[in-house]
Length: 361
Ligand SMILES: [Zn+2]
Image (cartoon, rainbow, N blue to C red; front, side):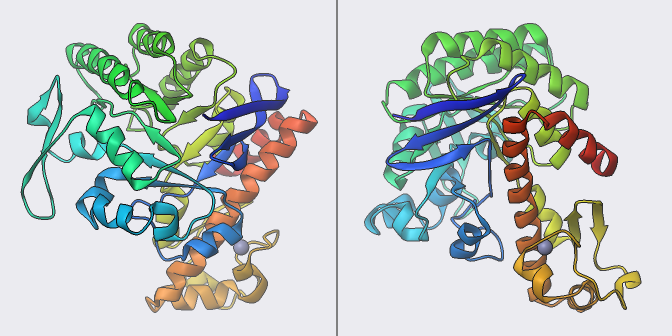
């Protein structure tokens, strides 16, 4: 059972507490992506020390490698990857359907070719939840059908219908599961998807099929629809959204949970997030810049090293540059979420957002 309690509100924005399996975290929160059990370039202790309570791993990737039998045998994913906090697992539906295996989606489930050994793997929604339970996830995600953007109306309708029927089957597995709405950016279909899922009834409600190339205003309109239809007393999770301004806009629209590779992937490309906007650290202009990556950052990298040094490491293709940038960017994301929670409590979320709009708009 996922226990969720809203403690403060500002407009539609919510601050609260989520508890599952005797672990808890404040909301809204951001989950670093640990697809294969590890946040790229960091140890899980480092990710935890930065301040994160929750990670999201990917059931599909862990099934292929090392195999769910290995993780089950090790005593579950928490022990296997040394993460004491909450672990979400994504069903991997997005990857299975997206990676070119979409010819063979059937009522009973998906069939896809393993990228490891080329074998054909068939998976029903029930087997997918069972996999996430086997891994030892605290929170599982329904297998859903996410069409690409843009998609024909027929495909969007099919995806909504299939997603609802699969969600019903996932619910019967009795795990702490979030459902995922689809419907692209068509108001009527998104509303229908949300309503059908609410009728089934879930512990948490995710918003899927967004942030895949559609215009921002369409994305926010869909978030508004979900906010209106989803039950107010359950956590909402907008999947795959990670830019600071998008997160603040969505918090303002009643979203509680986020995950994205945005800060970590940017870090590996030398893009540093600062309170004054993004900078590209591998530019020669930082050669003699002996200040920290960000003047207002308290992360271990900013405390100990200069832009000049990190820039030098980055231009020299030293692996430590990837680590330093990742630590800093995740620290920044964690600070952003802390500031958002404080702002909701103080009624100043709009001010925080306009501050970000100046640098990330
Ligand atoms: Zn820093």
